[in-house]
Image 1: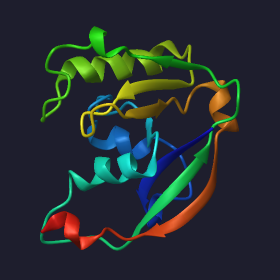
Image 2: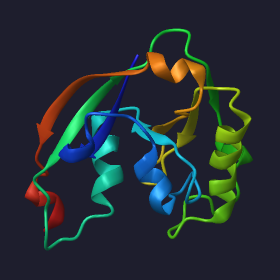
Image 3: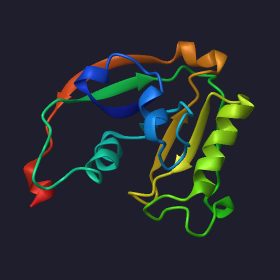
Length: 152
């Protein structure tokens, strides 16, 4: 299976979770390493684009294609089990607690969660501490340019 991640070129050669741990995000608290990926390229782009300014479009992004081998352990957070305000911005500590618990339990390699940006799509949270994570590989990194029509 392939999943996708849009990454700054300087950090596109590795999957570590260290960037997410710097400030935390929707599904992890600061200090908790997790690798975010998306089920498709469009979602990977949208998840980054919502954080960009209309006045500055970076030119140093790469779209990563990530190979997840068959048999990799995956669990899902059903939408019905999420707090009512799980998808608001700024994100709530309740969603961070879900991701933090996933990493701490270390039972599964991947947690599949719904996207707050594009309803119906899914993001993949990868646990860099899980033994199966070593089998997950970046198989392609391609330069990515944002279409400026997105930011008019």
